[in-house]
Length: 337
Ligand SMILES: Cc1ncc(C[n+]2csc(CCOP(=O)(O)OP(=O)(O)O)c2C)c(N)n1
Ligand SMILES: [Mg+2]
Image (cartoon, rainbow, N blue to C red):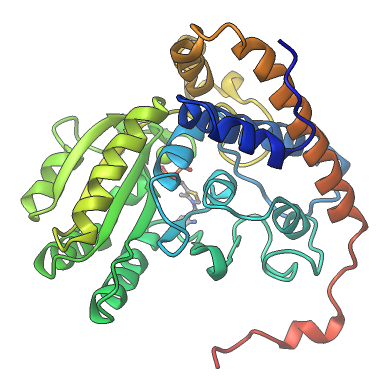
């Protein structure tokens, strides 16, 4: 059967009518993030994007599984590795790419770059100081509670951030005040080139640390978008009715180098064998396995790819031709009003 899909909107309308539409939407969103980032990797050597980039290829499931469990007014705080979170939370692709190209149409007016994809209208800030999303997420949750709102905040952070003292203080305060915050640790095993084994004693267990502070905590397969979505949905439901915080530790893996658009296994800080084991558990592959019973799915992937690539070509053209910020803008947004 030939599907009549001409643009993203009509694809979404089509998918929404399907019974297992959510799974297909998850796939669509993860594929979109992957294709966007692979395109960034492909043309980064042109040296027109003048900011460092930290790619999430391989880590799409935490972004989509978590953000799809949130509403528009819930707040997500992301890190230096924020493209996937921004797109999954509903960020505008043209505004994101413009930001990477330093253009005034960027979501930070072209002054932030890849690590500052901020858009409060979609409930999203990225803060690249490792660990800082944790207390800011708690602060935003405190704000929601004081205002009697039912929104929740989500703090994304990597495994390296769990080595910072602020995690303990934040867990403690969030549990004490039963704040509507969800702590999401994306454990990809590395902080730049340092594996967990040289940074933390083997007995150190994040789940136990969270529980010791009175925060419910669960481990979850971070490459299984459905598992991530279900775990986050539970945590969000609990937080909305005053049940307090939850921590989820999501196991996942980045494919590209820590910062940049190359592959760096040749450096020897991680083995080819480990890399291939994780590639076999690729989040898109794992979700496709759940969808194979649908004969049309292969065809749909092809069509999704076409639709997404059209959007990407359009968004890059937009970003590359947008104006640079005016010199006078150097002196704006320096202080909060
Ligand atoms: C406070 C602080 N120290 C150091 C850095 C430099 N730095 C940027 S990312 C990073 C590693 C972060 O590892 P992790 O939190 O596990 O996230 P991942 O990069 O693996 O996604 C470091 C050390 C920083 N941004 N902030
Ligand atoms: Mg890490």
